[in-house]
Length: 161
Image (cartoon, rainbow, N blue to C red; front, side, top):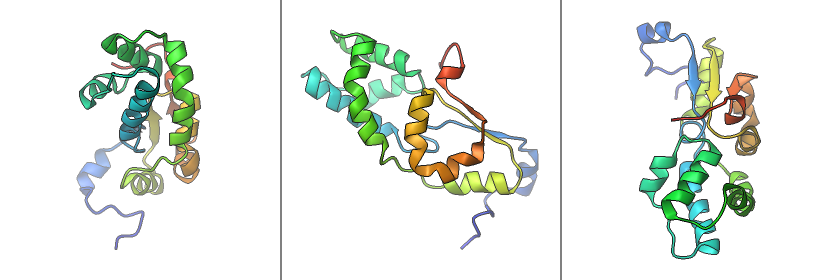
């Protein structure tokens, strides 16, 4: 097998042109997309019976700040709730789910490769700082490599898209 610091699939010429890498978090480094679909459907089943969070709707809301995504969910499904109240209902389920979050295949190896080879790395994520800490707490050995190069939705005035 290859040593963790070697990634033979990277063409040498291409590697020399890489000056830095900005990673997204959800769906790139950690496996949260299925988890969010499941948690949202659990909240709907428990508190808003008859509603379903489809993969299509999930796709439309991915990448938004948490408040924007929840507002989009509320509007799309015509839920009789506020963003604040929905977040209150969702938080216990998310905290439980995030405690067992997995890295996506190759994430640790790629981050290690970048650090070993002096390629500057950062994370830009639409999740808030508190969620970032909860999602990454089981993988500090990977996320410590980013140092302070982490930008969350708390750090910017407007999220994606």
